[in-house]
Image 1 (cartoon, one colour):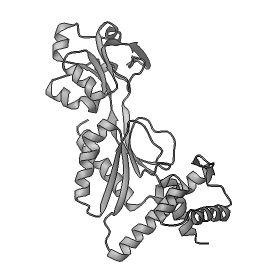
Image 2 (cartoon, one colour):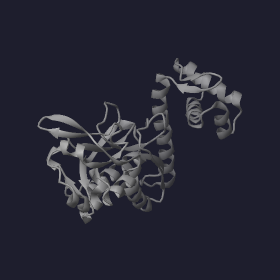
Image 3 (cartoon, helix red, strand yellow):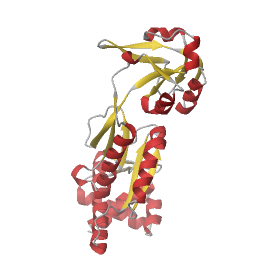
Length: 300
């Protein structure tokens, strides 16, 4: 059987979401696509997809095979380009995901700059405030904020962020400046639901972590709106340090309770594939690691 062709068909089925859509994308008949998948599963001696009349899902074997298949197809494509054009710069498309605000502020500008220097490279940037599965969702590279679970992903450390509490100078002039975390329970606070859904903020006291229940005039699910409210004196806010760097630098906000801040949060650029990762994955991931260190964490 044509293993390489069957591999292409399998990846198309997963990417398109159905046998019919894959047949259209490949310009083949649906029975031909079904036969190709069945032949591949028989060849491997493993079921790759759970199929019902309503939906399909990857089996554990299918998920592992998909990652390797994507890599093999990408390597073949890259080898063909290199052989035909005798050029070594990265080429093809990379799919990248990052948190929304961090991506808007930092990843998008750095990626745009890099692409302007790499005419044979294109990218798709997905800004999401949730972690997606790189393999199942066909993502090449992710910028992750927070501890990483044990996995086979390659992680390139970028830096660390702190969770900071701050308020406007006007608010601090009208209330007693808090000297301990518990003081915030009696002061107006602006809550960001993605940071503290229960309205409890975490602080470090000695070797322990304590929670302080806060309340105030505003709770919202968008960081930018919460920052704006704090700048205008609505209350104290707790944010990741990169989110308020500009406001702290210009004096629109003032940092408080620094000695009670919890441990720093790691930032990593991660990609799948390990030693099987494509040249473009490695090139873009390494560029983002270096450029983010310079842009966000210089002097930290």
